[in-house]
Length: 253
Image (tube, rainbow, N blue to C red; front, top):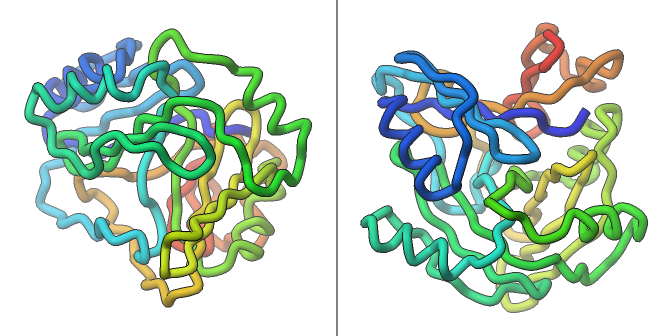
């Protein structure tokens, strides 16, 4: 029941496929004018063509709830970022050493989806489940960028944890951000080799409604099995929203 796939809406399938194969070494599994399915080691990315007539509701300020970014584990953040920068890709954050002993960088895909390179194993400030942390670290250094996580800002970590628990996601660790005046913290929910990176703030956060059909991030796909739909979801069988508006689709639907 880990994250199987991430759907991203794109205006030009060929251009987006070229971007992901060039900068994230994605391997093409299938492609036509309407979509492309790309292998990113631990999950796939489905590029789905849209006409661009719907405006995205995503905002770069992390105090907006819901989807924030997609993260990929890499062997060398600086080397990969150099290629991104050389190609004139829009940059959100150049490589830095971050809390937890990792080196990260952020940039945008052609339709504005925020992506992250993450180098190194997180050294959690608070370990909740050592077995899960050991399993994560045991995945090793990837030969090519591999999907690692989807990040989301939430209003209540407890509500988020309760929502995802029936799908098998477990809290394994946390990272503090002591230099952030907003009271920022990150908690991690894992299932298999994929992670939900959960942002919480003491500062007030803003709800964000999904914009179906807009360019950019659309949804994540999980195999819920008998645990689908998650408790309290209340939507139809193959699509639900989590408490902060992140769209989930049932891979078995």
